[in-house]
Image 1 (spheres, rainbow, N blue to C red):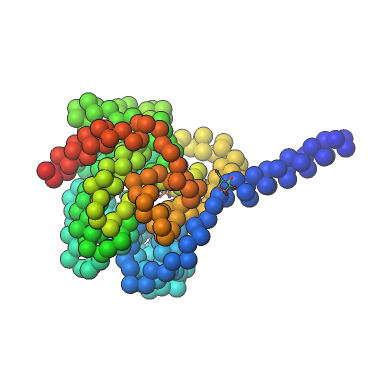
Image 2: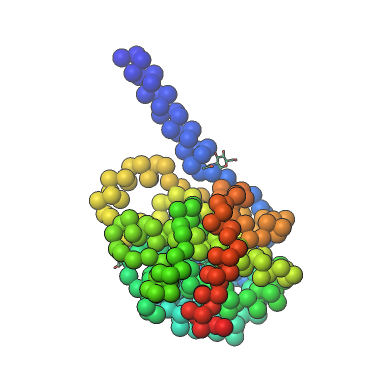
Length: 318
Ligand SMILES: NC(=O)c1ccc[n+]([C@@H]2O[C@H](COP(=O)([O-])OP(=O)(O)OC[C@H]3O[C@@H](n4cnc5c(N)ncnc54)[C@H](OP(=O)(O)O)[C@@H]3O)[C@@H](O)[C@H]2O)c1
Ligand SMILES: *[C@@H]1O[C@H](CO)[C@@H](O)[C@H](O)[C@H]1NC(C)=O
Ligand SMILES: *[C@@H]1O[C@H](CO)[C@@H](O)[C@H](O)[C@H]1NC(C)=O
Ligand SMILES: *[C@@H]1O[C@H](CO)[C@@H](O)[C@H](O)[C@H]1NC(C)=O
């Protein structure tokens, strides 16, 4: 009995320690202020995007919350204004599942905003189906929409000096592969709609983010613009909305204990956006506020270039 109590106590203390030290992870330690700077955060009406927007607004940045739903976007912008104490926060409509919407957003932005210092490509989903342009949903939203957005905004980033592009990827990219045959034939990274198929396609789409960042950094050589990709950690957000309900409910006790809060999940994004002196690491991948090495598939120059060229032609950019 005594032994049982001791073991129980040791377990509780160990779990608590694990949660406090390991799960929470490192915090962005930068105290950079952003007065006079402009930031765009995509998919910022909830999750880590919203927490990122609050932090940037607190530091004095003008924050454009680029979200697909006007209703959720306006409500979130109101929350962010209240929580940050800054009134310089606005919603702008952007649906990454429509290349037309991406073009409209960029056109409005370029007409009305004189500068762009931070582009945070945060929006992402795990979901089947097709975009408005008939692309695989995860390829279209997680990769191609952000690809076009970044390219259209690049002139403004370059004009603004030491600007940064931050791409929220995932550790899942390690299991990804880009099947160029499938892309040209089916305009998607994979077929099928089982959970396993969708998880695979999600990993492929996150590999695209890492490859994109790799290629972008090369194309940005000689400018003052730098770019980074990252894994935010495992986070309790709305990200699980299209996972099996049964699974989500069963795992709830574990995930609520061992996953980060969205505020903790935003720290690596903030590190990449704000930490002074990381410019020589442009094109690299971060997690837990630390630069990491990636597997060879994620720094494959030929695949990165091929993906870039295919993406350009799919956006009608050549
Ligand atoms: N949660 C995790 O454990 C985890 C782990 C690794 C990586 N990530 C990555 O972290 C990023 C943020 O995820 P999160 O956990 O904060 O998820 P979340 O709570 O589901 O937030 C995702 C955001 O993306 C937006 N979005 C989805 N489709 C969009 C579209 N077509 N156009 C514009 N915005 C769109 C969503 O808008 P609506 O609310 O309108 O749908 C929402 O604001 C994602 O890129 C995700 O892949 C998350
Ligand atoms: C994150 O970094 C902190 C501080 O270096 C470390 O204590 C923690 O174990 C790390 N967490 C993960 C998940 O790697
Ligand atoms: C990262 O940026 C590239 C191009 O801008 C894009 O293809 C990729 O999907 C982005 N990923 C995310 C979600 O940030
Ligand atoms: C994903 O979940 C959302 C919200 O629960 C739902 O509206 C949408 O139809 C789902 N999409 C798919 C393809 O399952």
